[in-house]
Image (cartoon, rainbow, N blue to C red; front, side, top):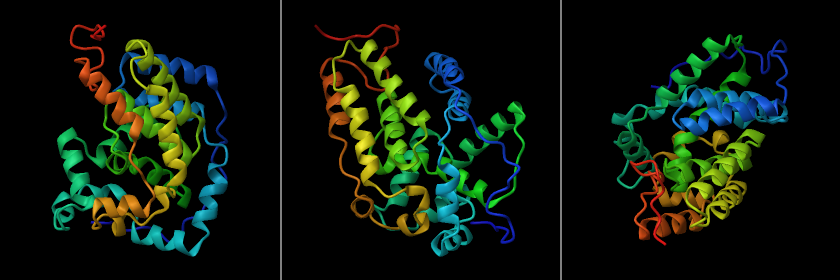
Length: 271
């Protein structure tokens, strides 16, 4: 289920090119993302344009630690673990594993699906691939995204995605997280005529992420069998109050938070 991993890989391949800030390129791809929020390739482009500058030092610090190396050997591939729902379902009812399976099955998602999307993006963009331990760390940052939805209670609606990105910024501070999160929040505010605490919800997500230890550096196989509420307590994840308030306000006004524009393409807000 977990696969194998090479022990002789360098921590960081020095041939990797240094990623540079390209805000105009990020803006261009964000405009494309607004037209189709399901176009994950645009998100990848934004992250390439607004990289986390201290990513290498943070990753190397973890990978040079005894805990980091133990985790790399124990969990070489998160998608292989997370997509084995038959095994995950053997854990006790109410566990993080069950909640994760419920979420992924309900949404029609798989951990490997995100990997495949990223692989298509790197192939079409012509990015050179490097085999080092740093790649394992990069992959884990990507692969815990859907688990963050489960742990935080943020859905896959537009505001939920914005809040997860703000939460993630405090975990792995790429400017892209804040850029997409807050720009999406501003767009939601515009579409919904400032009817709900949207930006407060995004800001709250950022604060919640700061209180939580970096999820990609946690032993996911230890968390999965635990009761969901116990995992939240262990990671210091508290309820997202403003997000729930926003949903309640929209529903009270006859608006589906998962379809803010409605089928007609117009916002349906009561006076």
